[in-house]
Length: 193
Image (cartoon, rainbow, N blue to C red; front, top):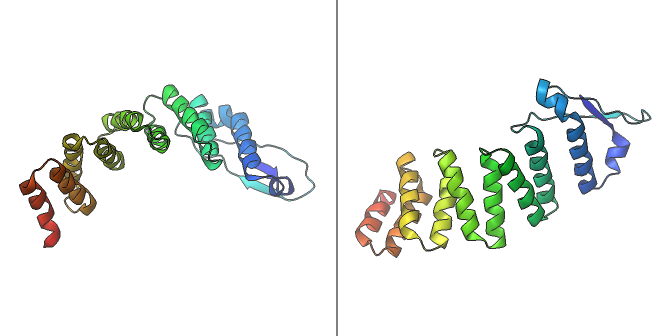
């Protein structure tokens, strides 16, 4: 159990509070990552204590710190630094799916669709069942006017869930861009039943 003086906590601005928490995580990480336990952080005992729980990490060591730092930068709307932090997570942990998705979304925000496609394709390779990343990939490919590749992704989504009306409509749209009117109509037909 980590404790921090409540008066001290209330007087902190959100960004400073997150930096303080990042420091607390950094201090307690070696113990937490080895045992799953938390370490106590002592502050002056003048007022009641606020309990702050150490979450179990999906990453170890530096990857976890960069992940927390990336979250901090997102909260501060510092997109460039957030992308760098999540890229460090990916570098430290090659199977970091959610960090890759963050980098992909941040690349889209900067207008770098090519990089977003690369990261999202890596996620789909690492976890073919991650349907949200597959939908993101299809949308990014559509934005690049790669309608044939996008339609493949939408088809996979529909194979997984025949009732996914969003994937169905977007697939029909891709077929429309490909000038395949019959397939577009047959794709939309189940929506009219």
